[in-house]
Length: 479
Image 1 (cartoon, rainbow, N blue to C red):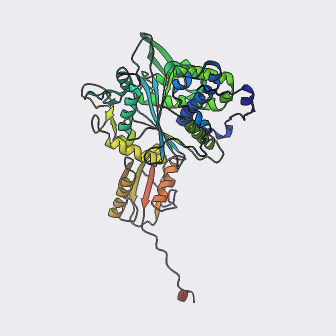
Image 2 (cartoon, helix red, strand yellow):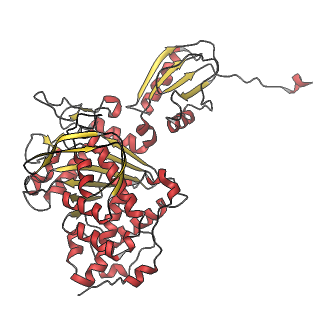
């Protein structure tokens, strides 16, 4: 059976252009991974309709679109994305791959998992560094850098690479993955060039004298501040990892820059009429045709994704995105180490190679309480009247509730003060964590008490004083 979908320029012109509201800069900044994935899926779907009118149906199969004629008729009223076994999260693996002709390595330099919470509408992004050691070959017991997993297994048979990489990532993070998307360097460059470049606010100036070029190296430099980057420049910004300036020479810094570029691409994509412009749409489609691999998706997936995008871009949206990188600082320095091997630099779990119990536990806590774990404050607790042992017990309860945070009991500061106080020692920082913890410890006192004339340690201080006794006024006493 021949199937064709026709979308004419006239029909496209009737649709309302998609625009971002300029007064929502903060909320726009918080939505990167899901925009990228769903936008790629949306490009693929809309592009299939246009492309079929010109060149046939092959492109749909290439990008993973599962088309069935009956689905045009059987349209679900409230379609949903696939979810994990909890029924709460949709998890997506995003991969960037090195396919340069001179290397032939097929290394994955970008590995990010995005988790969308269907209840809170929040998004958590977790980056796994390319040098993280894992069991990359199921047939062997040895461990190697995770960025080689796709290449090793893809050479065993086309399609094996992403399947095995997905399984490895699921084991490391303890998350079930429902979708994946992989893009190579050429596709990355072409995608960004097709939308006219991206604006990126470079946080730190740095120079990399060993950026790979052909069989050698070149020097790349970036100055702090906002700037327009074309595809090639954005790729260099996202991939550089040999600078010795401002902490920008690590895998961890690179992972954070990759998330910046993703967010910048999303802003350009959705702040223009790209998806409604046939010329730009065909350019985007051309970029992804041979350079992107996406897990199988359907009309229902596309419709569900579009519904989420609309809801997230509405005035009523409270959706936020929280970013994490598996670096040595995560989980109060207790999860990841760079000393996993005795014979050289290697990143891995502190428990030992292949042991992910703590990382799994942390990830589950982070996606449930992303605000606190992303702010990641040091929390110091003082006894100001409740009593040493009672305050220590309260501290232990906090540690059990919010495991892997830096929570410390600092002993007795006063013996006669009343009430519970919690406050940030840094102006306009950690406000969200203070509010959440204030509710948990049942206090409305969120500023430093007047009786405290000296500074306390930590990002956030909690003072446990004596319980305030409210005397009851009886009827007799008023007569």
